[in-house]
Length: 155
Image (cartoon, rainbow, N blue to C red):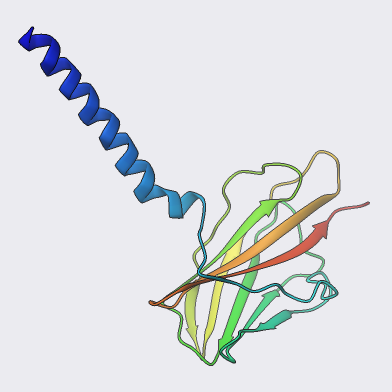
């Protein structure tokens, strides 16, 4: 009887451990934002940098260094911020209609509110791919998300 209770307790502790680990890792896999700001849908990252203004007056701009945005070739991505100081900046690249795996580089501070990093987008077998590049910024007091959309390849 004592052995069964011990086994049950160990099983419940393992379940609790899995729940705690899942909870701790969930922001990494499914980023949550305190503030989500929608960019102008007319802005095309394939042609220009795209910026948004935050409710507090700050600004976030996303720029792809190479145009057209290449597939399976590294290129530089840059986020410029004005009016606030980010603690961490990442850009999460996700396929709109197809899971292309986790692709979320953390950008490195380059001074003057600029953060840069390198990313490589995988190729889609259909040729055309719709992407969402979500800029994720942690300021220390909140997490900001800005979901930009763009397409790659032939239509």
